[in-house]
Length: 450
Image 1 (cartoon, rainbow, N blue to C red):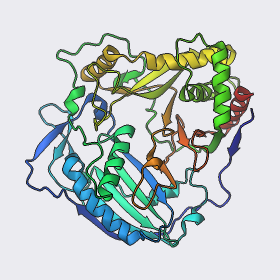
Image 2: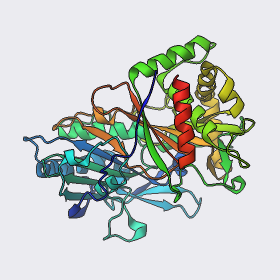
Image 3: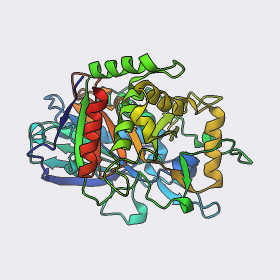
């Protein structure tokens, strides 16, 4: 059950030769709505950073990039009538010290650009090319730093007639599922249809209880003053090796079968759980002990991953909830266990992290955020873009060839990407680690598969 992995492509383009043609602000079509502020939950509060995604499209003779840009501009204007916070600005409420969104209609960014390359010349779109950042705009030079939009859209044309939609959103605006719903709604408007799923923008549905009550220990969270290291969300200047490990649907199936053989059955053996267990084992065993090159087997390792809580609350959140309805699940074990326990047991420990998140646990975590200032903290975070389905959205000009985030240097975040075309149930595992750790990670990856 061997794996395949790829090094950095030999001719990775470092400059996509992108020229900005026009940069402007767009506004909701309904300018009569009253100005108001939008409450942000404690989950939203800690996610004040930009997320950038790029969606690549093949040439379509019926939809040249110039036409696409104009259609997108008009559709986004209409979309902001329902998603009015996208034209607002983040601010700190002076009375509470909390972030909220001032829905002041200040506008979202809209940029058109052109690359001197053809889409095919960009090479392997799965590989995390830092140059893809040129396809996204997050800061408008014409605006002061404290008046930057929460949402910016860039359409970049390629010489072949293909194009890319680059979207920058502040993470307080959407989580992965609600962003997918936004894209589906945008596609509906482009098809001249009503919104497919009218959004629920009421973030008070995840408001802390009064008084807040922390009823569980939250090992996945740490107070700012108690943390001596950086958060997993922060980029690093350390040199990292990037490597992509491909798992086919057949390999994932065999991992699930192997895990089921030694699992007790009270945790579901899912594709996500087995891939996350594989990543955790490799990452934990690749970290060298302080005094030498051998792994310290008594060291405790903690893995984090996001869990959607929409259906876990009582009452459930609407599926159309736009905010961050995810909490961080955790699993922890000594490296000795990760080395010696049957693979099925490691999968169980991972699955127990999600099972732990009940309605009461979720409310306890939200209340923790009300009482303390802190953030998720662990050795490694698995960030899954695998089954979000961004590339399944059907626009008038077709589905994206590929959709991906713009990736930066974060050695404690392992990303899961969907396959490009073809094997929709396969997954790419992207790891970025110092050279020595990467060598060990690869060894344990192969070892676990065998």
